[in-house]
Amino acid sequence: MTGDCSVLERGGVESLGIGMDLLTPKIADITADGVSLSGDLTAEELGLTDTDVSIRGTLSVGLDLRSVERTICLTGVVEGTAVHQCVRCLKDFESPIAFSVRAAYERETKAAAPVAKQDAGWKKKTAPAVEPKLEEPDDDLYYYTGDQLDLAPMLREQLILASPMHPLCVEECLGLCAQCGKNLNEGPCHCAAEPTGSPFQVLRGMKEKLQEPAGQ
Ligand SMILES: [Zn+2]
Ligand SMILES: [Zn+2]
Image 1 (spheres, helix red, strand yellow):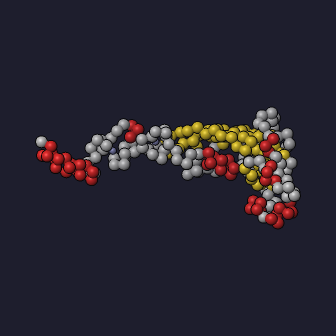
Image 2 (tube, rainbow, N blue to C red; image 1 turned 90 degrees about the vertical axis):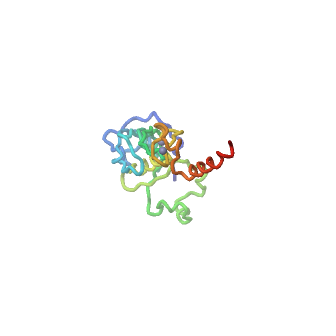
Image 3 (cartoon, rainbow, N blue to C red; image 1 turned 180 degrees about the vertical axis):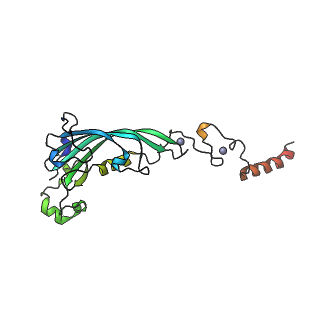
């Protein structure tokens, strides 16, 4: 049965994580009292590529893990600096990363593969008569096998979810001139004043010539 991770509160957990690997804590070391893990991780250790999220330096990660019935509940905080490319001016800029994570880990059994949740046969075998849906906490549910957790995929996913879809260096970024490519945040280019060769300018010129004699 799914343990209820929503009762968890951060803090008050003794740091027993000495010698434990931050990304692959051993299941046996995660007790009902909980353990705290913290440390710095590089993008490489997380398996992050620059196409996912570009990280400057290392990420500071602090995690609390606690065993609640047969579920391992995880809460934590991730902090660091991301480098994004502005979608308008294409300039790289840094922005702070700071978000909290909540996740629940359950042992993956043969009968309960990740997709088996929808399976009626699986429900009959292991789920109690009461539908757990109402009480289900909104922690993201992950599965583990073996005798340790692998936290990298979860952290990777959270980092990607936390990064902006359309990063802007500043909200009012002026972008690049479509004609000369100048970064308009650094000042105006001459294209706006004299749109040479634009069909509108040619038309405007013709119109002005036609209007001139009439106006005099
Ligand atoms: Zn920009
Ligand atoms: Zn220009």
